[in-house]
Image (cartoon, rainbow, N blue to C red):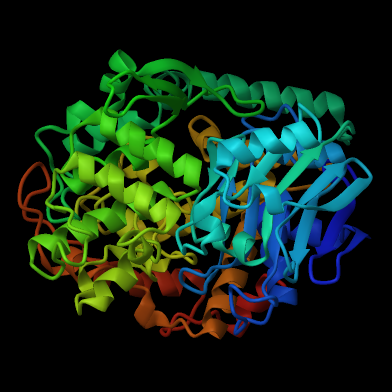
Length: 600
């Protein structure tokens, strides 16, 4: 096989067995790899009714065919599982160099089954694969775990691990690789913790074969040139990182403030990418084969929040920032560092704190509930302390570990959890950007922007001009972006590569790499196949059209200030058309004709 390695690794932690299997060529062709391959494996092998934190759930680590090549930003891998946060077939996407190293070691996917009786880690060095004791590392932070594993295995080993949050089965726990890169969403870290799997350490010396090296190089160089010429992909993200979006979204009237009570902040500039670049930035940093370098190596010298690390990204700066009423960038960066240390999803963590702050100000939580802490909006010191408490599972932090939905529901106000399908939404207010609201509502893993990033068109001006406040055409736009990102995630390339290239370029590179003739139509069809298979899983779990919705606040409470003042989201105008264009019936169920078309 070209692009793909041809081998899948299966590890049963209950039995302590390790098997190598041939990667199914037809599955690879139809589902591409990474997310798609993982979704197919979970769909085939895990009962939708299985306990997400039980031995019958599985965890799939999968790079894509681009991963480890010099295709643009080809450093991605996916972790796919049943989510403990909301039960969806879910998972998360991470960059860095861990995914490429899995490919170099010789694997298209690593399937983790069962549950170990005591803490273990998996050591992979090409054909050598061992399940080793990790008891001494249980309780360690991400950084300490990474250092310890490199001492035990190889100084150049690439490590994906959980911190204390995953060990404590926090439903918002992430899996961290290279200490600062996160497979952050859907609680994948808790699944890893439930299996007593502390880490995977890998080093590989193999190569990835290319079907047509000349055509692949030409296609890659063409794509790289287009990305570098793009004002977002080639300039903005490198200069200011994703945090550049703070001011852009604020100026659009779509920056959620104080647990989404408003969508504009007069002090947003204090936490934006420009301020970060001026005060705390050490240097831009990229993942494997990255030509964008949106990552931020940062340093805080303020004694109250001092530290050195990476981040924050836009979502983190927003969640710990204006969504919590905070404009202290040093405190925000410290909260981000702590999430990396303990292994927490920054979006869900910050959003859960913002929800707790609103519940506190309404009197639904008191100091008796919060360990004596004042949870008023804007309390930066308390915000940082809440991250620490959640990371170690201390006091009120144990309640925050379950995410905002369960917290709000416990005091009778689930409507104040800004979630879709119980997962916290990212930093784009659907009242100010209609299409992203439809994407949130219909997203297969709950509140998510990267699986259907209509912001590129609605706000950032990529492609044809589109009014973010309009509902017309947004159903078709969402479907295109959802299918494109499904295929993109599966390829092993980064979402930000699409700031400059689209499906045609991706399909061309994939064809030259693998030798499989992916037309643009077939590439997008693979994305649709993955999206519909995820939908079928969720229907079996018990999700229905009633779950394709937004928090009532966004449908009924107009934005109070700023450029989008007076607006709500008009999901009801977009959803029926979305179902029809998807080839689903009025109840949101894929029709037999659609399933036949996609060979499902």
